[in-house]
Every structure is written in C-alpha cells, then in structure tokens.
Length: 195
Image 1 (cartoon, rainbow, N blue to C red):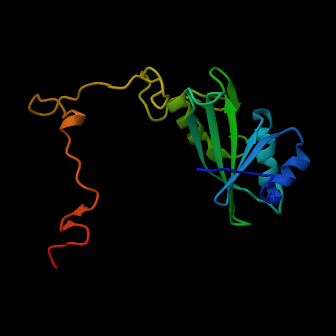
Image 2 (image 1 turned 30 degrees about the vertical axis):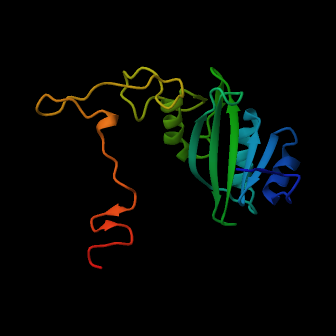
Image 3 (image 1 turned 120 degrees about the vertical axis):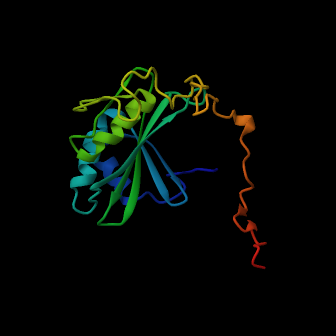
C-alpha cells in the first residue's frame, strides 16, 4: 500500500481551513485512494472537531465511528485513535487521528459529539485507552471483572476452554474444517447442481 503525502496532491479545503485556524494542530496529512487522514496533536482534537462541526461550509456533524489501533512493535507512540467524520452538507468523509503511548490520555469528544460516548467506551474496553473527561468511562463489551484489554497485541491468546452439553470441550482450531470460500449449497462456484 503506498501512501500519498499532501505535497503530491492538492490539499482538501477542510485541511487548509484546519491549518489556517489551528496552525500547530496538524502533524501530518495522508491521502490514499481519495480518503484523507489528518493526524492531529491530541490536545487540539476537541477544538478541531468543534470547528469542523460548526463551520457552515464544512458541517461535519456526524461522528460515524471511533477505532483504536495497537501498533505495538511497529510505531511509536503505540496507540492510534481514528475518528471517522461525515458531512451531510458536502457528502464527504474525513478521518482524524491522534496517537498516544501507554498511560497517556485522550480528550473525550462527548462534549462535541454526544454519540462518542459508546465508541469511546469500546476503545477503552478493548485497548485500555483512557478518554479524559468522559462522563461514564467503564467497560461496555467485556464483563466488569475481566482482566486486561483483549485487542491489545500483547494480550495473552488462548482463553478458557468451553464445556459443551455432553461434557466435551469445544474443538481446537486444528479440528475445525474450513470450507472452500467458493463452496455453496450447490457446490463450487460456477458449477451448481442445476447445470
């Protein structure tokens, strides 16, 4: 996958507006296959989002999703948090990204986008990233007594054995038969029983 830097393509108007309004906020801009990622210094995240939401020409009013990424052993800082914004005015999508290391916090966006509440809880639950100012930061997917955060790359694999009805354990991964992706009820793709 090759990435195109902002120097090779014309910069999107949203990015230029962010740079103009917050000169120290943007660390890097990456464009790939028509999508743009703006890597921000984390302290500017709420202000940049508020600007993108409230500017009438931009109107990024929909926070579609928040995703955590663990880059353990690949990049520093270790964690990336990606914010997927959508504008119903321009029908365009913009990805914002902030990077944090172990033990660092990220400003919560719940004050800008109330819909950030559950996605931030998911990222906290799966990666252990703390969102500073979140009104109710607690587990949302895992049980309250679960130890650790399962989407971290250093989370131990294996888990617990599952006992089924007749006292048998679940099949190991080696025992599971994976069908050919082209197989279906009628046979392999292109050779159905009706032919």
